[in-house]
Length: 258
Image 1 (cartoon, rainbow, N blue to C red):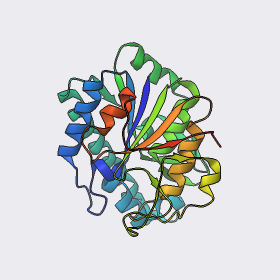
Image 2 (image 1 turned 135 degrees about the vertical axis):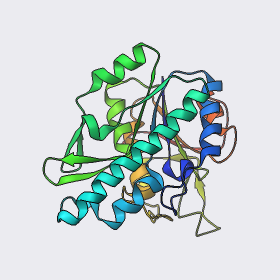
Image 3 (image 1 turned 90 degrees about the horizontal axis):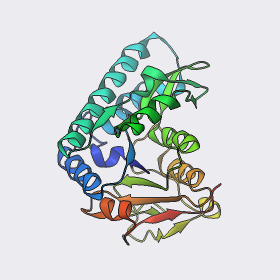
């Protein structure tokens, strides 16, 4: 069983509100289908979520009533994005069902309370691929907050024994600084908890869910035991399929837990 995160930077253009990268998503879904492994898929919200969430400070929780229309709009937008992703999965021959987290889960001070494990397990038992995504959730303490796809991934690994976790982004791996801003950035083949202390965490795009430093932390959380957790560049054809099948490809592996 493989857990795959299709990052918002790959499936959307995060600089432009609600811009879907249909060509890239169709190719990635095709690679998942060709690999032939059972999977659970999580995707980021990209420009369907981050633009308005940042503008209206939704991750700060409820401030005033002016945020309410934005909460509803972000919820609508990310569900539409998920429908587009599921459509491409089904075109590739993968029976997939979108599971909006905001419809069945809550948070408490930005911590996900995930008590709907049975739904995911029953879909998998029938050979159906659950598709979850970054969403705006009701929060018992804050009123509402943003749930990242990475948070969902970490919670899923607590009750499903995934052999491998794959993060699909728009960079080759994890670097010592932002490769989009620094041409001399060096890529790590392996990242550990110690590596986390030495890396420039600045993000090259607006992101309300923490950027590269937060992604590194989630990767290490999920690499406990003998589980393989890797980051690949999904803009390069063939890398996702190779990663699923365990073939050599350019990537960064997280090891040793945290």
